[in-house]
Length: 477
Image 1 (tube, one colour):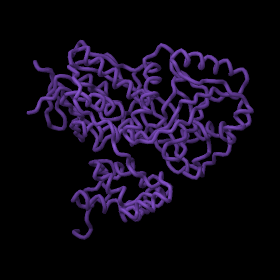
Image 2 (cartoon, helix red, strand yellow; image 1 turned 120 degrees about the vertical axis):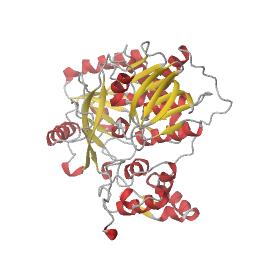
Image 3 (tube, helix red, strand yellow; image 1 turned 60 degrees about the vertical axis):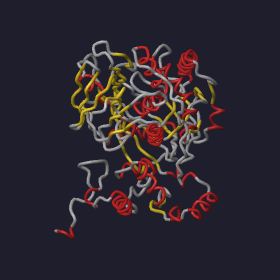
């Protein structure tokens, strides 16, 4: 049985960021994910905002890591061929007496090192954000905010990690963590993995994974956020990310530009007990729509094409990132809610520092492959480039998903990169993500996936075991 230097539990944006950073060194690393594919946990419902650091306490860990991560994300996105767009954010107020609160946020953000902040007034807002409500009195403008695809970032990080030697295992839910003289034995899905060190980046389940190692001093409480996706025709509804004044528990209900073009509105912020509750509600929809309309009055209910809910792993007011003295060799990375995606590369550097301080030898490899070839997406290519692609590879001209302009070649490439489910294909390519929700393309996608994997259609799933699309082959009935 192989013994690894390190096991990372959880392959969302934080786990894959840690894996990629550690893959620079001469280490044997295993990355374990309980779901059928990566990014199927907390990361799948991330809005993709790269926060500037304007809404975090100035002395908080999350604030410091957010500002550092905002800078690092640009470099990593270039290296991995993942689109990052700096669009800026506006924290909008509707009463003159709320402007002092904007000044307080500005001062705290500047203490963290956020650059380029300024208060903008009605005339600026009318010129630069014409669809914004005329009732808006002022806003705190943060130009360094950006957007990125959370799924494609995870896949870029994981593919680059694998190229640099990280072994990735899916469908591996951890059930036992045992201490040994040499470190740990981790049991997952009946398999045993040995390692000297373990990093727990298990998102919503980080408290349960810690419990397996004998650490029980915190609990993850899910905080549900319902979000609603608008038609791609509304891509230019706003020029910036729009925020209201934040509350104690939430950054509020936003109007969000996304890397894929479809604006989003939301999220709500409701504490709940069920870590497997993805349901949206009528009350959540009404609340989000009303709040979004306060900022952009032209938003209509008919603009909404999809509903979803994400669960944020709340473990207190700040991130928990620490070496566990009760279980030497074990590092906890928990409570990574917003701005977790932004902070992820900085979290990875911090975890490396903690491991080095506690005995892990970090000797750099002579060669580290930091670049990854950019994935081609027709929806992001100009028509002239598309014509060239089709000449070289006719499968680019075979459009499978009409709503999002996804070709058979892109589907084939996604499967070759690791997509084994319909959701895996969707997150990589956007096939099924348009207004028709896959009504046109699902059967074709299933056939392509079945052919590529050698599985019958009855074994093709939406997101893993238990989500089969076709329950039986009627020809054999």
